Image (cartoon, rainbow, N blue to C red):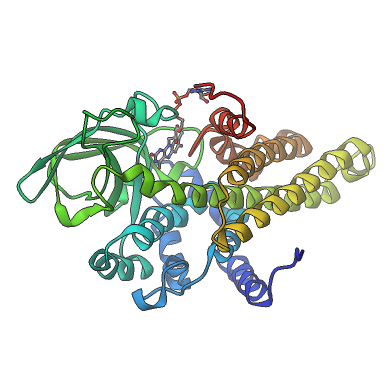
Length: 387
Ligand SMILES: Cc1cc2nc3c(=O)[nH]c(=O)nc-3n(C[C@H](O)[C@H](O)[C@H](O)COP(=O)(O)OP(=O)(O)OC[C@H]3O[C@@H](n4cnc5c(N)ncnc54)[C@H](O)[C@@H]3O)c2cc1C
């Protein structure tokens, strides 16, 4: 049993860490996030220049290669200063390079992966619908019907993050209503956002502000056959392995938030004085940071366990759910303690604790709620399905 990262991964992490230190200070990330209406193209361009969009894409398609452990390390390091804005990299990495890289045809890989790797294509995920995200399949109203040479999409999606700037949407739609089970008869579409009949509208929200999360209306939008991903009608089976990968990415983002919270809290406890001494001398605040550090280590262990298992090709479904639950609860709790340690300044837009709290609050809800994750964990213990 080896808990140490191999040399190759440590070297990658150290290079990324140095780059982040030089290129994306927290103060810059704070200013970017504050602006609800402007997508941070400058951040996207920095990722392009650093080659991050190519991580996880095979070299033959213009990427840098790299396994799930490298993805995890990059996600963690990015989230330390960026918190939720790390999704700016993560969404396209998941919706584009992971999805097309895993279940795209050779022609789709050749066409799209080099564009993604070089930062020329942004993608967004359009799964959730207004009638419900937890019962995603039961609530799905978006349909696609066969037309000559393609499929005609109608319906509405909600919360599609960065859809307003995306070139393509990874969209799930019902293509067969006659099926017996709701996970059957679904198809994945790679939808060009400039297709006539698509309307995308950003929504106001609590955190991850400048990233933009949008409603998407499809009104007779036609997707050509060549942009169907995987086998029509079998999208759910295709998607399942990538959903575990998404949970690992979320675990890594949450750990990056805990890293950011801990380093800011320790700094502040040295600088800030009360009753003639640094506040870091008060035992209760020491207990708070001890709790944050413990959350950091427990999250890290579970994250590395899941990533190592997935990189060996083993099934990681149950553990990835446990990771998502633990990591998101820990990150949000850590940020809450961070706000308490900062006192009034923790509530101020001038410091990052409020941003860590707002952004990590989402990860208890999406991409799957922690209630639903608990349902699955309980079912894995042999209990009857509760929903
Ligand atoms: C900022 C933001 C960004 C997002 N980005 C994206 C994106 O890019 N793409 C995308 O497709 N989606 C995205 N989402 C959607 C997200 O995945 C959903 O919000 C999430 O899956 C929950 O669905 P819901 O909001 O419809 O809640 P609901 O499904 O309505 O759930 C409401 C409550 O009921 C509980 N509940 C429901 N069923 C059960 C059950 N069986 N047992 C116990 N409790 C239950 C839930 O846990 C929750 O507490 C985003 C959401 C937000 C807020």
